[in-house]
Image (cartoon, rainbow, N blue to C red; front, side, top):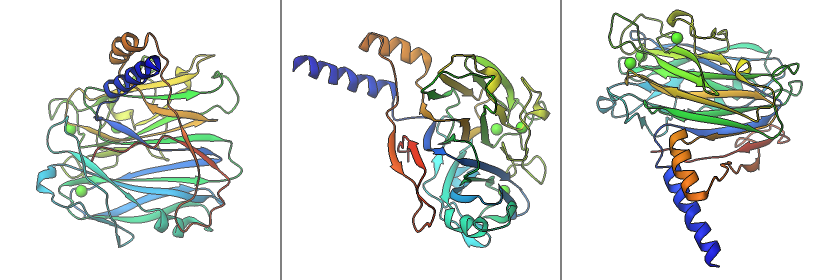
Amino acid sequence: MIRLRTCALRAALFAAIVFPAHAGLLLFDSITGSVGLSTDGWGSSLASAGTISASVPSGGTVLRAWLYTAYLAGSALPSITGSLDGVPVAYGPRVDNVTACCGIGSARADVTPLVAAAVNGGPGGLYDFTVGEGDTALQDGEALVVIYSLPSLPVSTIAIFDGYSAIGGDSFTANFAAPLNPAAPGIHAEMRLGIGFSCCLGDNPPDQFSTVSVNGTAITNSAGNLDDGTSGSANGDLITIGGFDDPFSPFLPDYASDHERYDLVPRIRAGDTSISVHTENPSGDDNIFLAAFQVSGQANFANAPEPATFLTIGVALLGGAVFAGRPRRYRLGYRGSTVPVAIMANAVRLGRKK
Ligand SMILES: [Ca+2]
Ligand SMILES: [Ca+2]
Ligand SMILES: [Ca+2]
């Protein structure tokens, strides 16, 4: 009994220290099945509405759809509002990036019913929506994230992390049950980032970019800028989303050629059972508010503790314990959906900091 209590205490201490009231991007959702991912962004400092799109093949069925908005000067924005195809959007709690300057943050809305109604049973391809902002000067832009099922697709896992980036660094890990073979036919592993309030090198110091490393290797020092802004480099327009129509960024791209969509396969070594990603924002004034992953097969995604914290505290307390998320299984389907709930989702749902 004493041993059990000690173990429980150690586990509690470990959990409390490794998972602090979390600063950073949190795992919001994860799903495994014959699923696909669509992401797109729009921003403007002048117009209060524009076009944002979803790309869903014929036969695809929308399972979930979220609209994000990224803002600045949050204290001057008492309420966060917007619309999709003229329908007011009910954004959830604001998520201020308390680690960064300038009152930057983001909010998320569930727009599944509206997007599903437009897409399901449709011809497939590109679906355009009119996205609106309540305050275009203080809202940099929006991201539309859609997960759909399509029986002909190979099984993959999609994971969405959202909230705000800790400028000192966030880490994510995908754990796989079987060793990976990067040469396997059809293997797929990618990450797409959504970043708000990021603009420019040189003419607006400090240079505004984020860095990304995968399995310990830096893959970009150029993530950011207003790739999805439509009105030029002004506050209220500073948003970029790795989108369905963006190519993968080359390895260590320059600023202009980094569109925040990254192929992770080249960083996988034969036999790896996990993929680890780490992001930082050295300028302290950009907000990575979204990280969307899609990988072949089944994977368990988790927020990873920072390496130094993990080694120092984890080893000391537990003598080398192996960290592993404990996924919760549940059947899938959104409220009111007629989608067959044949797909098993594999998720760790964590509360986001309010
Ligand atoms: Ca705007
Ligand atoms: Ca910035
Ligand atoms: Ca960019």
